[in-house]
Length: 218
Image (tube, rainbow, N blue to C red; front, side):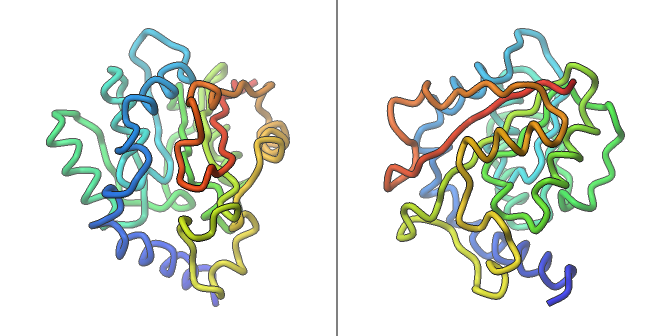
């Protein structure tokens, strides 16, 4: 399987899931909590430039827009973007949803104050490259906000790929907060702050251990 084949398999998987995805999604079922957590992690009271990488159906992008930020959101799965655009229009938010994969998106260096990646790192063949890209996109002092979890703890509830695709993804089983902190450090970010304590319990079925971390670009 070539890198191009892998990307097509991943985007095709999410496009196929898109029509029913938000029906069981945590960011819909617990939308008020997610807004509270992300607002705290953004740590600002002024409108900023936000880039949401791997936006899916727009979970982070729509919260950021609701908080008054200027938002660009990228995803390679057209089906997911269609759902995100419809949600943005229904809520009256002017989010710029862009059909480009995280790897291929041409985003100007130093053009964002906040970069978000929610449940994205586990889907990537090169997750460190995504964090390095986020670092480059951010202005000095800008903030990354990432969220993910140990999805293998509750396999009956998780999203998963065909075996040939999963074998190419180093974080397919998910990742721990400790590993995420190590990755942020290696990508050139300062000490990470955790925010998942603002949830009374894991927002995912099966009590999946999850994290929300923010860190500042040095």
